[in-house]
Each structure stands twice: as C-alpha cells, then as structure tokens.
Amino acid sequence: MAETAEFDVAIVGGRVAGASLALLLARQGRRVAMVDRDAFPSDTLSTHFMAPLAVMQLGQLGVLSDVLAAGFRPIVRHRTYVEDCLLEGPAGPPGAFSLSPRRSVLDPLIVEHAVRAGVTFSGRTRAERLIERDGRVAGIVVSSAGSEMREIRARVVVGADGKHSKVAELVRAESYDAVPAMRPMYYGYFHGLVPLPEATTELFCGGGQIGFVFPMRPDEDCIALELQPGDFDDMRRDPKRGFDERVSALPGMAKRFASARLEGKLMGAKGIDNYFRVPFGPGWALTGDAGYLKDPSTGLGMGDALAQAFMLADALGAYFDGADWDAAMTAFHRRRDERMKPLYEATLAFTRMRDPSPGQADRLRAICMLPPVARRILSKLPRHFTSMVSPATAARVESLVPQFHAARERDAGAARERETHAVSI
Ligand SMILES: Cc1cc2nc3c(=O)[nH]c(=O)nc-3n(C[C@H](O)[C@H](O)[C@H](O)COP(=O)(O)OP(=O)(O)OC[C@H]3O[C@@H](n4cnc5c(N)ncnc54)[C@H](O)[C@@H]3O)c2cc1C
Image (cartoon, rainbow, N blue to C red; front, top):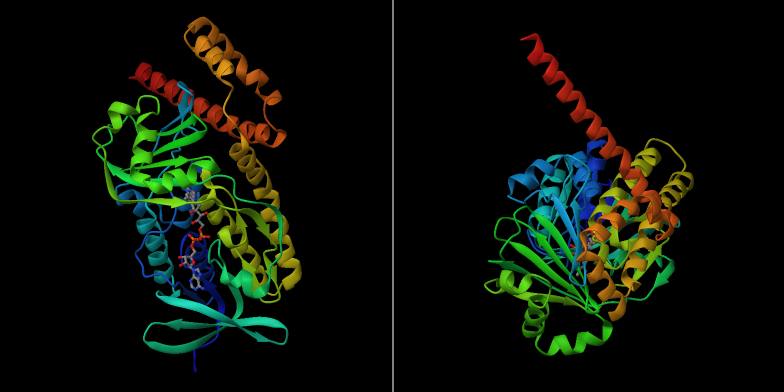
C-alpha cells in the first residue's frame, strides 16, 4: 500500500463544510489533505438558500466576490405567505442580502480557494478506513478508481462527509437530542418563472405544505416543496405532475409558473433526520452535517457548516499551537452547541408548525382586507411578538435590531454631511 507524507489534518468530504475548514487551516499554515468521493464540479442534494449571516461568512472566507461574479443575484426581499396573506420585508439589515448559489458552483469555488491556499485535494477518492495508532485516529485509507489503496497519515482526521458520515460511523460517534425526519421534500431548477420586481425569497405556508422560491441567477430559480409524510408516496408516483399542480396552486403562482421549464429532473428526499453528534474524540473531529443535522426548512445547513468551520479551525489551530487536545475540543463542542442549539430548536419548531385552522385563516384574510386593522396589528407586533415566540427566537430578533438602527444613523449622518456641504458651497 502506498503511503503519503504526514499531514496535520486529513479531511473527508470536500463540500461546504470540508472545503471551508481546509481553506481556513491552510491559511494558518497547516498541512491539509482533503478527499471527496465525488467528481468536482458536481451538484449535491440541497436547495441553496443562504441567509445574510451565511453570506457574510462567505465574505470572511474570501469567496463571496467569486460567487457574485458567477452571476448569483443578491436577494434583497423576503416574503412569507400564510395561506394567501403575506408579510414582506427586507432580506437582511441594510446592505446585507441573501443568496442562492448552486452547489455545483459554490463547492468547487471554495475547493479552488483551498487548493490555491495549499490544500492537497483529491476528488473521486473515497475514505474507506481509519488508521489508528496508540489509541488515536492517525489517518485514513482511501481508494480512487484505477489506483491502489493508499494511506494518508495525519495528526487529526475530520469527517466533513455529510449526513451519512463514514467517519462518524467508524468512530461510533454518539448522537444526542435526536428527532426523526418529519417531512419529505421535492425541488427542482426552473427557467421561465415570471420574477418579482426585486430578487425575493418566497415562503408559502399553507395547505399542509411549505413552498419555496429561491431566485438564483437571472431566469434561474430553485423551487421546492416540503410536504407531509403521507404525501410522499403519492408524489413519488408522478413527481412532475404532483409538483406542478401544487406549485401552480400557490398564491400568485398560477400565471408566473405557467411557462416555467424544469431543468433536468426533480429531486426528492423522504425526510432529513435531526441530531447532534459528539463532534470529537481521540484524533478525530466532525463538522457540517456529519456533526449536526436538521430539517432543511429553515435553510441553515450551509451557514451552520461555515460557522462550524470557523470554530473548528480555531480549536484545531490552538491544538497545533500546543493546547491540550481535550481542552481545545471540549471548548469547540461547547461553543458549537451554544450557537447551534437555538437554531436547531427553531428548525424543529418550524418543521412541526401546522397551518392555522380554516376558521383562523379566514379571520387572517379578513384582517388583511381591512388596512386600518392590518396596520394596527403590524404596528403593535414589535411590542408584543416576544409573547408569541420562544425566548431564543426573541433574542435572535433583538440581535438584528441594532443593525437597522446603525444603518439609519449612518444614513442620517450622511444626509447631514451633504446638507452642510451644499450650504458651504
Ligand atoms: C433537500 C435539501 C435541501 C436543503 N436546502 C438547504 C438550503 O436551502 N440552505 C442550506 O443552507 N442548506 C440546505 N440543506 C442542507 C445543506 O445541503 C447541508 O447542510 C450542507 O450540504 C452540509 O454540507 P456538508 O459539507 O457538511 O455535507 P455535504 O454537502 O453532504 O458534503 C459531504 C461530502 O462528503 C463526501 N463524502 C461522503 N462520504 C465520503 C467518503 N467516505 N469519502 C470521501 N468523501 C465522502 C460526499 O461525496 C460529499 O461531497 C438542504 C439539504 C437537503 C437534503
């Protein structure tokens, strides 16, 4: 069996979690090997919504300008429908935006940056086994088509290998707070959907399902449906017909969707499990979906993978610089869970949430058709919403408020400066 030089880190999985971690570690000057069984560029099962915070992290990684250069549109508005009533607002605080980059573009871009930073990347290369030495994981055995198995020895092996993580299986990583999959999902890429005037993410809650429109590039949208478990078999019989009927029935979509053409085929998933895994042990760590998985309805997976990459790169960096392994990784575990638990709970709550009863939906319609009532309720919402959501969700809302305030102050300052300038001229 061939043996390669020793690396600081061997990463299994080269998509958003693995490649971002590889890039950050290479920038620290670590020797990083990364393998992925897929050929790149390629797609993976995922819709593509990235919230403003995730977009900011792409900026911190240094890949955002390349993603924008690939044509993905900054999404500036966000719509949520409850039945046929809607609430619309900005997609993020002023200056921020969300994005829906295709994984076949995003993942290879991060890999490209990682390779430029010095990462040794092998595509079409599968991790088969772990190497152990003195009770610690000390590398991986990999196979690639047409060549013999080889060893990649490393001080740490990271499983960034997604929800069916081989690394997690081999180290028998324990899971906790697990909740089984709740909802199936179907999605596809469409051309010819009549767009809204500004790039807007749309969420349609009603009829026992959630519909999503994610604008990607001009004339390219990802449309998704999250269904009830009982709907899956029915959809599977004729996915295209079922999908078209359901999307056409969403508010405002009959005309907009009438000339939309599906690119390729619809993708479907019976449901995504929810769990945390203990993310480290002797010589190994887990990140991305391998360490923490949840239903995709809140569109947090990629952003959470990026956030974990930053946290794990800090922890591994501290270890390589001499910190104790258990201390550094226990701190990572705690930091990860502190940050991700509220998002996990919010995702479970959103996935479990059911439509208002027909009577309540009619009351909502009546409220929306009377502007003074709708205005009064919306005006009161900022004072009373804390009694309607969990403390963690309320805290999330509150954390965004200062950003709107700061932007308003900035605008006011700039306006004052313009006036002073005009007077002095
Ligand atoms: C239907 C659906 C819709 C979603 N929509 C969104 C969304 O809108 N927004 C969002 O942020 N998230 C979404 N997600 C979640 C998101 O896709 C994941 O959170 C994200 O892909 C996690 O990235 P990752 O790098 O951890 O894993 P993955 O993207 O799964 O990558 C893992 C990689 O590991 C490789 N691998 C696995 N085993 C091996 C092995 N033995 N050897 C070598 N390589 C291996 C695989 O080939 C793969 O390339 C969605 C998920 C699904 C299923």
